[in-house]
Length: 152
Ligand SMILES: [Zn+2]
Image (cartoon, rainbow, N blue to C red; front, side, top):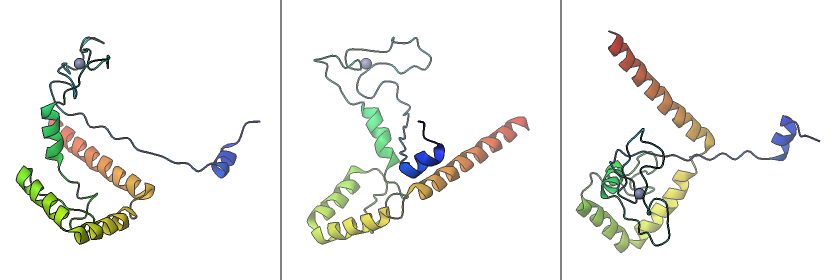
């Protein structure tokens, strides 16, 4: 006998997850030198590495790492000095100084750990959904503004 929607909701707890992907504007793939030309014929931008063939050796795309580091710490995810440490800019020396300080101050690491758990408790599905909708609203308003400019 098939369960009704209400039966399913009563019996199971819906658990939703978000998987977020970011496409970096690199000219080659993340782990090999194959092109990433949009619209190319299927299976024409492949090699033994990206096919995962035995014996192939992936090499990380340096440009992708550079772009990823440029994103930096997320202020929505980390409250600086309370749930973690944010580093301004992308100077490796600044990052090194912050990491060195954390390594030398176990009490600070403990406080940040406690703060991170408390900070994370504020996040949840409702909060995430609300913030996601805010981003879509913002992006939509930007797109509408851009279209209006194009019309005028
Ligand atoms: Zn490849």
